Length: 73
Length: 73
Image (cartoon, rainbow over the protein chains, first blue to last red):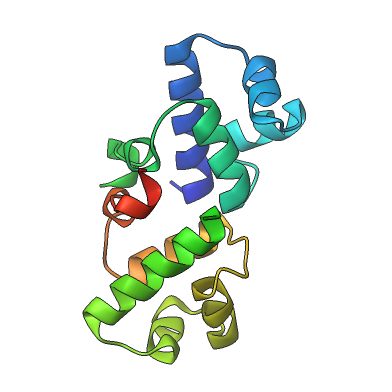
């Protein structure tokens, strides 16, 4: 599984845990909604600055974002 | 401190722990040496794919890369 897919799945997982829509997450992170869709679907090679915006909007520290079986097989 | 600077400092810190040069790290990660220099100096908004190459070359899991006071203040 590519890192793009892993990151996308993790964002989707955390967003669903919080129970907000892609649009709500996008608005909170000040990122375009279509960009969030593409990231979640593993179609974007996201930059660290945009990842930081999403991680902050998900209210999770970076180390916890990456503390998932996906990233540590 | 911007996320670009935080990532750059962390890469440099881990590279120095291993005791390899920027050039050796760049070769191992199959990334241009000048790109590694720019990343370490906080001048690049690195993509997740290139960060994965560097993290793998540093032989550290993503979650440990981000488990540093820099990222979790």
